[in-house]
Length: 413
Image 1: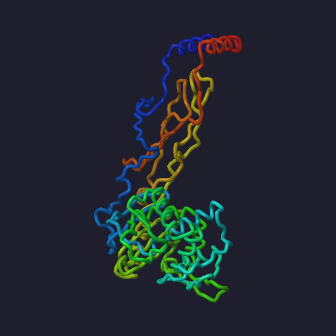
Image 2 (image 1 turned 30 degrees about the vertical axis):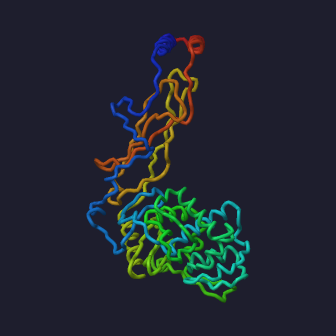
């Protein structure tokens, strides 16, 4: 009897309209899927603790500032973040990024020798007093730029990579465009020279700083407090005091000119979470470090990251009338979500998938979601996608399967 019931049900499904499970479909528990265009949609209010940034829980003396989390890029605080300003030596974040990317691509190596030109040796301000014709390795040049903010080394590396500082500046601008730094324009590699055409913003500096610290190799340099060049004959001391005095500091770059004021892009990591603070135009060096410390301390105290994926292993979903009997769902994104620490212990993840799908199902189709909540607040929503396709059986394949079931299903006793 069971085999006849099975054949009857299969015939009924032959005439069932084909439909895919997509955003907005009704699911068996009557919960409606409301997917946004982004794979990971986060309620903005979930990022505000009881002491909201907007309400003045934190403020800094810097005329322009921003605080972001590295992995998600979420902005936790901003103050005139899009105001164009001369960045002084914070410019070197972009210079360092292009050097590191050249190293990663194999265009240059750390042991390559770099020859100092007369022009590079003429740079003033912070420097390691390179002489015309003097050669240092890329490693030592990068060390001088990162630790001591050496303008002569920055120009020497710019010429080594692009032939001239002007050509290197063009590469800086092209890379800035790639990163979405819409309010930036560079005319030199060091930031030493006063130039109204050389400008950026706190937000754009955060973008290029975030890109730089994606390269773990740079932290071998940015976390050094003291070092030396020329076989120990020339000492280096990091211009970023946070490297020595702030727990978890990972970099990144200081800057000062009389027009730019005291500037700083500061990064720090604790418990696998890294933040970037940028402050521009402070009146004193002490003020910029106090501002950075306040921003970073606020971030570590109030926020943390949680995984966006489901807690349990996802089971395959049956596909009715499909050439493949099952498809495996997987999260569309596997990153983490930034949340206030105060709600971290109340986070719950709900997996919402259909009990079965009707063929055809295409790879990449939305087949469910993971809903992340904390109490009555929605923290995030992650789409679940089919990782393979299952085409619909044609009528001949359906009848072939039906007759196969007739002859292979055991007869009831």
